[in-house]
Length: 175
Length: 288
Image 1: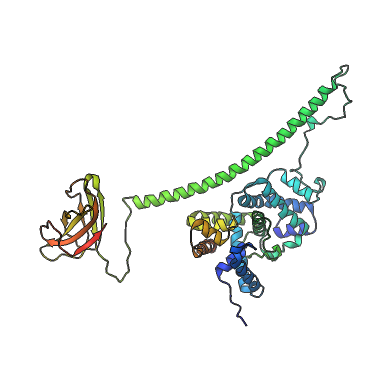
Image 2: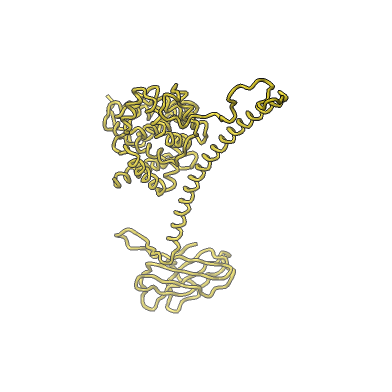
């Protein structure tokens, strides 16, 4: 069953569709929360919050917002960072739009894509990867990263930009 | 009217990463994010770029090591969502009680299940208390085990990353130290390379290895001469004469030098063939 069909069923309040969605994406959602929070109880809380929000307000995710799994990943990361920041909220989830350019429709597509991304991350310069992770998974501002690493603010921005460009270029090249 | 300029890529990234509000040091960031937010409402091009950036970031998020959630998490979620087990076709995650610990029928107080035999009530209740304690302990151990398992998965992922980094460092080291590696110094294609030299000196042995590149050809009856300049201010010590080959390369290997001389610097001069005992100015190459 496709994500679109599954979401249609969730919108029709079908519990088995919600159950299937959990089975399909709970590990990914929990893993993202664990990567940010490094705490099993907090990660489960965030996971529950993300799925519950989707069950109670399925209109939050519209099909034109991109792939469901990508959307869940970003929402989970944002909710997890909210916790680190003491509850201050991220941008409104309603505004969260992803591109449809990356094909993650099937599990095989997704696994293929993620394998490529892991290779790119493993082979990119360590300082680029570390800076990206500090910004993305630790929710640190550019200024905070510059202070911690002793690098100029411009260098921090460049590293994050370069890391993201590397990922996009590599995916474009490999198709 | 202020022109609506496209935000630069860094501000767009900042927007997609989400800058925290209300912190003094992030005021600039917050202002930048606000500017981007307003701009995106009017600019489809930048909106598309922001969506693409979020997709890139989503891929980064999804690539983390995968850790399954606790087994009971699904049941907790379903309960919070108000979905009963009966409403779900699959209820594999539902927590079952331990049937062997639940009596089929409530036993009469103080009456043993074995006919004709009376038991002390304190012993019966003591047994149930012990059973409950075992149950709680079992649940606690299971949670502990799950936490440990998650930590292990996380640690393993970090170890894999560290190993990958170490392997990369090892590879770099092998490239740098392998005798089969070709070393090339790149310079401007239009500039004539400047003469240069490298000296490696071991004071305790009085041992010196010197190599030079891009040396100019010598006039007839002239030679280059290497000098050790002692740190104590005494006279320069001649360390051998040499002539460059057709490519301008030359070397001086382990010339006869006194041991234990602290070198302040090294120099190369041009001398008459056969060498000199004191250097003739100018010093063509110097370093220390």
